Length: 322
Ligand SMILES: Nc1nc2c(ncn2[C@@H]2O[C@H](COP(=O)(O)OP(=O)(O)OP(=O)(O)O)[C@@H](O)[C@H]2O)c(=O)[nH]1
Figure 1 (spheres, rainbow, N blue to C red):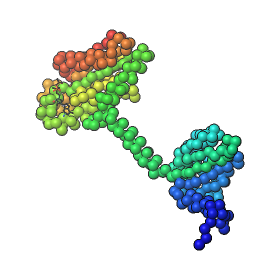
Figure 2 (tube, rainbow, N blue to C red; figure 1 turned 60 degrees about the horizontal axis):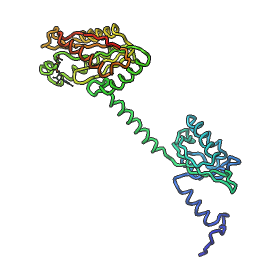
Figure 3 (cartoon, protein in one colour; figure 1 turned 45 degrees about the vertical axis):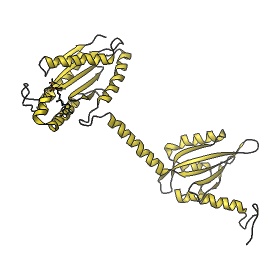
Figure 4 (cartoon, rainbow, N blue to C red; figure 1 turned 60 degrees about the vertical axis):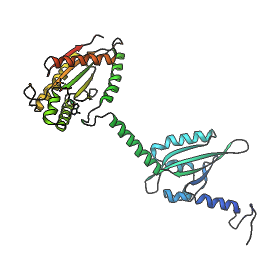
């Protein structure tokens, strides 16, 4: 058995240590590479690259091969970022989609170390490419799930329309916008009449169905994309009408009642032709800072209460002072 010193060249011209390092480098899952900074050419790239992307190691000649084998959507910002960091002599890492020989893409994390010479000038870049496709897929799934959850958290489960939280958020934004631009906004509060009797008569499940049907009908009554109908709670709904004056808001309220009448949901104990009806409070305001948003909603709620006490199946209105 022969023993070699650390720097004795073997038959291939490599010292035993560098042969060991090469074996180590070429048996890791991470793909090592080196670029000569002056010529911008690959001095080395691990043969594992072929297994990952399909391109032979000797086809990686210059940095343009690296750039051209990158997803077009990633190319500019990744190349610009890496060049700027390298010029500044800063170690860095970048994620991008690398093109495979069979026209697919693999997510790569490139971890780059800048090598300087004795004068502190950039001499070479060395790095490792890691396959992070699985991690990216998981990240994308989590992101999609998060978006779905966010959307769900603004939706009412029974009716599929916006929930109170969505209304509160939209109302706060629209109030600010109306105040900044000196514009009016209107709110409708709607409540199903004699709903306790409806539940008692037809059961809670049928009651739920009725609430969902009314929600669907109210959605049909709106025509501007900024209008919003939300479930305010229980058998109560709210409609937000930005940039809308009282006369138009009343027309929308009348349309809601008309569509619900057309739907003709039977309610044997209702004095209004034995059909389900709604009472509506309507309020319009040009916010100015005097009245708080919650005071305005309370004022509209008082109109709803008036509609109830004046016989139900009615609309009561309020033009709030600015
Ligand atoms: N099925 C069902 N019933 C609900 C839901 N939320 C609230 N309710 C019922 O709605 C009824 C509301 O009753 P009240 O507040 O007395 O109102 P009302 O009977 O409609 O009387 P007026 O509004 O004065 O006409 C109650 O019986 C609640 O249990 C729901 O999600 N599903």
